Length: 72
Image (cartoon, rainbow, N blue to C red; front, side, top):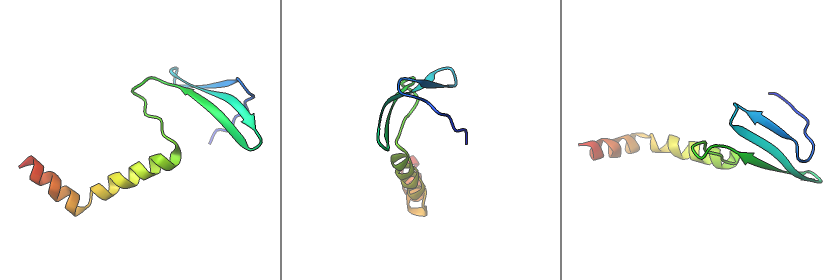
Protein backbone atom coordinates (compact mmCIF):
# COMPACT_ATOMS: atom_id res chain seq x y z
CA UNK A 1 0.00 0.00 0.00
CA UNK A 2 1.27 3.43 -0.91
CA UNK A 3 0.81 5.98 1.88
CA UNK A 4 0.80 9.70 1.06
CA UNK A 5 0.34 12.80 3.16
CA UNK A 6 -1.83 15.54 1.66
CA UNK A 7 -3.06 18.82 3.07
CA UNK A 8 -6.38 20.50 2.39
CA UNK A 9 -6.79 21.37 -1.32
CA UNK A 10 -3.90 19.09 -2.35
CA UNK A 11 -4.47 16.27 -4.83
CA UNK A 12 -3.26 12.90 -6.01
CA UNK A 13 -3.47 11.83 -9.67
CA UNK A 14 -4.22 8.25 -10.73
CA UNK A 15 -3.61 7.04 -14.27
CA UNK A 16 -3.65 10.49 -15.91
CA UNK A 17 -7.43 10.86 -15.66
CA UNK A 18 -8.49 10.47 -12.01
CA UNK A 19 -7.85 13.24 -9.49
CA UNK A 20 -8.45 12.79 -5.77
CA UNK A 21 -8.49 16.03 -3.78
CA UNK A 22 -8.62 16.57 -0.02
CA UNK A 23 -11.51 19.02 0.41
CA UNK A 24 -11.76 19.33 4.17
CA UNK A 25 -10.33 17.89 7.38
CA UNK A 26 -12.33 18.05 10.63
CA UNK A 27 -11.11 15.93 13.53
CA UNK A 28 -10.90 12.33 12.37
CA UNK A 29 -13.01 12.92 9.24
CA UNK A 30 -11.54 13.72 5.85
CA UNK A 31 -13.71 14.82 2.92
CA UNK A 32 -12.35 13.96 -0.50
CA UNK A 33 -13.44 14.85 -3.99
CA UNK A 34 -12.91 12.52 -6.93
CA UNK A 35 -12.82 13.74 -10.52
CA UNK A 36 -12.95 10.81 -12.93
CA UNK A 37 -14.45 9.96 -16.32
CA UNK A 38 -18.13 8.98 -16.18
CA UNK A 39 -17.35 5.41 -17.24
CA UNK A 40 -15.23 4.87 -14.10
CA UNK A 41 -17.45 3.50 -11.31
CA UNK A 42 -16.76 4.96 -7.85
CA UNK A 43 -18.16 3.28 -4.72
CA UNK A 44 -17.58 3.50 -0.99
CA UNK A 45 -15.83 0.27 0.00
CA UNK A 46 -18.75 -1.08 2.04
CA UNK A 47 -21.09 -0.63 -0.94
CA UNK A 48 -18.53 -2.20 -3.30
CA UNK A 49 -18.29 -5.26 -1.02
CA UNK A 50 -22.10 -5.58 -0.94
CA UNK A 51 -22.18 -5.50 -4.74
CA UNK A 52 -19.47 -8.17 -4.92
CA UNK A 53 -21.35 -10.38 -2.44
CA UNK A 54 -24.57 -9.95 -4.39
CA UNK A 55 -22.77 -10.92 -7.60
CA UNK A 56 -21.33 -14.02 -5.93
CA UNK A 57 -24.71 -15.11 -4.58
CA UNK A 58 -26.32 -14.72 -8.00
CA UNK A 59 -23.73 -17.15 -9.38
CA UNK A 60 -25.15 -20.01 -7.28
CA UNK A 61 -26.63 -23.07 -8.95
CA UNK A 62 -30.11 -21.48 -8.80
CA UNK A 63 -28.84 -18.32 -10.44
CA UNK A 64 -27.10 -20.28 -13.17
CA UNK A 65 -30.26 -22.33 -13.80
CA UNK A 66 -32.30 -19.13 -14.12
CA UNK A 67 -29.75 -17.76 -16.59
CA UNK A 68 -29.86 -20.97 -18.64
CA UNK A 69 -33.68 -20.76 -18.73
CA UNK A 70 -33.46 -17.20 -20.05
CA UNK A 71 -31.11 -18.24 -22.81
CA UNK A 72 -33.24 -21.21 -23.94
